[in-house]
Image (cartoon, rainbow, N blue to C red; front, top):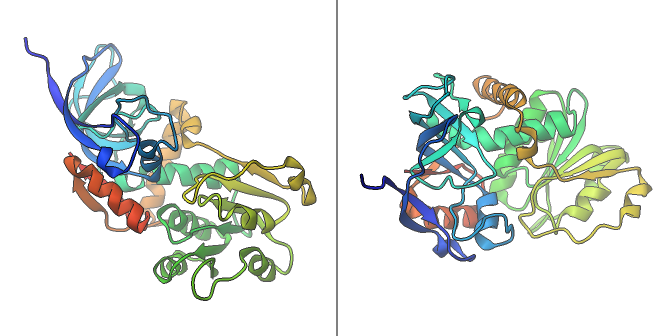
Length: 331
């Protein structure tokens, strides 16, 4: 019997988008407790860019990147009772291997996709929604009256954080680097959008202190990293938290821990994968995200879709325009 094969993006060296090459690879046999998922939509994220470039050396080469997907169960292994062939499912995975037409995965890592939510919507919002849930409800506890700063509030994650936090009664101050992203941050519910570069640029921390009557924010969310870290830290209230969840401008230099003593601040660097390891917690988080989508607590833009073989073009688009709108691969 001939070996079953499928299509996948394979990286053999770190580099620019051009290292994302389509290849025909051997399909994995199912073991007990596993499911074969035929992908219908694959999310493209900055994490994938960091992996491809070598900033994150977390993917053994040669390897296939990707951390979120939606698909249909094509085959179930022995002992799997929760899912059947034809079921719609989604998942995120720190084990990568998702830029492919299919993937074999443990059944208990999968999340059922509700009938009323489309594959494109779930693929556009799963990782970001779960990350926002961790940032707003687990790492910090944002609610009525909480004052927060969202750096790059017009980006993909920034918009979700701003919208969801606003719906929960928080005061959200955003930052943006362009007119286009400033407009999106304003539409996401920010009470003010501070320009941190270009025409009209302001000192972010100084303006935050003005807006909060000299006190600062309770939580600052920062995925920009190197160029924004100092401003985020200086924007905090006494006892405030700085939550770093990315580094689009580059890694933050080593922190002298004594700096935090000035206002009894704390800094964290959460990874969503640590919070979804337990099936019950993952299901509860996904349920909150799906309900937030239904109630439009946050809205996703219309996704830009690329064929799997055009993954390089998808990465070019992400790096050129940021995560303002979701980018998906369609196998």
